[in-house]
Structures are given as structure tokens and as C-alpha cells.
Amino acid sequence: MIPIILMALLNRMQVDASKHCPHHCLCFDSSHFVDCKGHNLSHIPGNIPHGTWILDLKHNDLTEIRAESFNALWSMKILILSNNKIEKIHLRAFQSFGFLEKLDLSHNCLNSLPHDFSASLVSLKELKLSSNRLEAVGFNSLQHFESLEKLDLSHNQIVSIERAAFRGLSRLRYLYLQSNRLAMVNNGFFFMLPNLEALLLGRNNITIIEAEAFTSLHTLNILGLIGNQLNHLKFKTFLNIHTPGTHLQLSENPWICDCDLQRVFGKILSVRHLHVDDYENISCAGPWQLAGYPLMSVDTQLCVAETATVLVITVTVLVTVIAAIVMAERNRKKNQNKNWNDSDSP
Ligand SMILES: *[C@@H]1O[C@H](CO)[C@@H](O)[C@H](O)[C@H]1NC(C)=O
Ligand SMILES: *[C@@H]1O[C@H](CO)[C@@H](O)[C@H](O)[C@H]1NC(C)=O
Ligand SMILES: *[C@@H]1O[C@H](CO)[C@@H](O)[C@H](O)[C@H]1NC(C)=O
Image: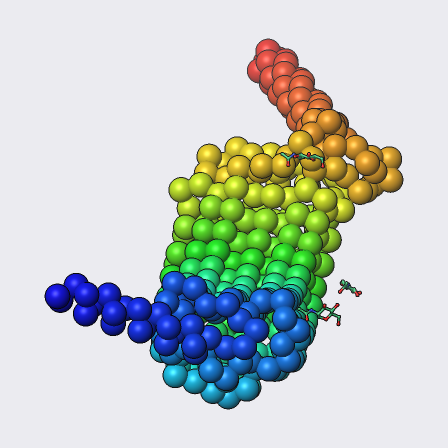
């Protein structure tokens, strides 16, 4: 008797759920999963079932996320908004998303984030913002992401990062910033990221890395700097990375292969916890005689000229010193003989 009532009840619930499925969308799993992708929707459907866990809105025509667009969807865990034309996210857009774990906003047209962007998203673990038009990263819009583990900001137009912009992200493990327009890595950019494992900065426009830039990253496992504008490095920058092991990726930079560079790489290669993964692919952009050559094939010769100079100086000094000693010795003997002769004469 009881099971029959239960069955009937479950049936009712399923019918209810499908009855409430928004137009154009498909609802599965008692409406836990609502699939509205690829329908050229220009507005977020208004009657999304309240129990929805996963909502897929990718490949539509959304241009903005208004305040309370997703009102009362308290159970949401995954929200996919990629491949739309979203230019603006209004204040309080994600207000009811205290349990949201994944948010995908990649392939949109965002050039900034609202300052309360992170305010409600305290459970968010993964945020994709790749392929937008973001120009700056600031502390305000990220500060409450206390659960965030993966942040993808690749393929934007980011030229500036506020000092310690990521300091609220104490659980962050992966930070993707490749294919942006950063020209410099400042000491303050990656401050207070105690769990960061991967920092990808490839394909930016980086010419300068300040000496303390990576100092506070004690769990850094991968540091990607492929495809930037680096021509020299300071050993101190890398000596300051105190981790059990860090893999560096440094190819496709316009390295100036001189004795200085050879010494820096020589030292990096000799530090046990640092590994240059792509050393074989590092090639010289200058001086012109070496352009195009792999650093590996010329590195033993780069300091030859300097070594020769040092040798010449050393030999010169040695010769001078020996000459001085010989002269002194001669003078001493001469004086001695003179003294003998002096004391001989009565
Ligand atoms: C979406 O719009 C494009 C062109 O505007 C059209 O070709 C396509 O059929 C539309 N898709 C749907 C699901 O309506
Ligand atoms: C890269 O930086 C240089 C200055 O260092 C600047 O002139 C150039 O416009 C930058 N390129 C891009 C793509 O931002
Ligand atoms: C070196 O470059 C080649 C060609 O671009 C690539 O296939 C290879 O994986 C690179 N090796 C390393 C260690 O990065």
C-alpha cells in the first residue's frame, strides 16, 4: 500500500517537473539538469525549476546578466553560460548561488566584472572567464572566492593586475593567465597564494620579472613563461622560489645569448628543485651571430671570451708579481753582496 502511494507521489513529482520545464529547454533527472543550450535565447528563461542543480545555457544570444536573473535557484551547483555575447554582469546577478561550484563564462564579451561579483559565490571552486575582453584584474571582484581552486583568465586583454589582487583566494591551485597583454610581473601580483600549484603566464608581453615576484608561492609546481618577450633573467628571481620542485617553461622568448644568460641558466640548472622543462627548445634571438641557434648548442662557448679575458688578466698579474719578486730578490742579493764587501774591508 505504502509503496503504491509513494510511486504515485513520485509520478506526480515527475509530471510536475516536466510541466515546469522552460520552453525550449529539456529537463532531465527530475529537473535537476536543465538543458537550454543552442537556442538563440536572448533572455534567461523565467521559470527554471527551483530544484535545478545544473543549468546549461551555452551557445545562446544572452548579452547581459541582470540582478536576480536567477532568483531563488538556491540549489544550483553548475552554471554554464559560455559562448554567448554577455557584455555586462549587473550587481546582485548571482545572489542566490551560495552553493554554486562551477561557473563557466568563457567566450563572451565581458570587459569588466562587477565589484560584488564574488560576494555570494563562496562555494565556487572553478571559474572560467577565458576568451573575454577583460583588461584589468582587481581585488574587489575576487575577494570572496574563498573556495576557488581554479581560475581561468586566459585569452583576455589583461594589461594590469592590482597589487595582491588574488589575496582572498587562499585555496587557489590553478591560475591561468596565458594569452593576455601583461608586460611585467611585479612583486605584488601573486602575493598570498599559499596553495598555488600552477601559474601559467605564457603568451603575454612580459619583458621584466621583478626579483620577489614568485617568492611567496611555496607550492608552485609549474611556472609557464613560454612565448613572452624575455631576453634576460635574474637568477635571484628563481633562487627566491622555495618549493620542493618547480618546473619552468621558458622557450619562445627572444633570449640574448651572452655569458650572463649562460651563467643564469647554468645556475638554474644546478639548483635541485628547479627544472627547465623545455631547455632543449630555448633558442637565441641575439646577438645576430647566434640568432636561431639553440642555447644548448652554444652555451659552452658563451663565456669563452670572458674566460680568455680573465685568463689574460690573471697571467698579466702573475707575470708582474713574479717580476716584482725576482727584482726584489735581485736587489736583496745585490745589497747583501754590498754589505759583505763593506764588512770585508777593514
Ligand atoms: C539560431 O540562429 C541562427 C542564425 O541566426 C540559425 O541559423 C539557427 O537555426 C538558430 N538556431 C535555433 C536553434 O533556433
Ligand atoms: C608589448 O609591450 C611593448 C612595450 O614593452 C608595447 O610597445 C607593445 O605595444 C606591447 N604589445 C602588446 C601586444 O601589448
Ligand atoms: C620542443 O618543441 C617542439 C616543437 O615545437 C615540441 O614538439 C616539443 O614538445 C618541445 N619540447 C619540449 C620539451 O617542450
